[in-house]
Image (cartoon, rainbow, N blue to C red; front, side, top):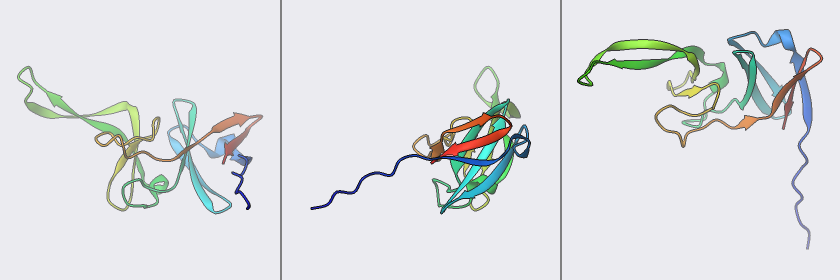
Amino acid sequence: MSTVQPRAAVRHPIGRSDQVPEGGRFVVDIGATTVGVFRFKTALYAYENVCAHSGGPVCQGRLVPRVRELLDEAQRTVGAAFDEDDLHIVCPWHGAEYSVTTGAHPAQPLFTLRAFPVEEEGGTVYVTL
């Protein structure tokens, strides 16, 4: 009888630090896995390029600040405002949104993107799969 051993995680250099701009992204194939790396407020975040909602290429979607509803004292809607402290990825297929910093959908926290460890060293960005 044979057993299947899980494969060891491997650290992959994916590009130069300047290829991941502040408030932007860098999408790269690592073997059969496509990964989006995002930089927001100097921190790096890496996610598989697969939308938890419908499998779309989420990391290639629009980057926008989260829209928050504004309420008055009686909790009635009086408008909306962008929250510049919560950058979101919007999947181009059906508009599902995810926080860049958590990978979670704001209304359905069970919908989360698959995250990977990401780090920067000596001007190079590394993702571990």
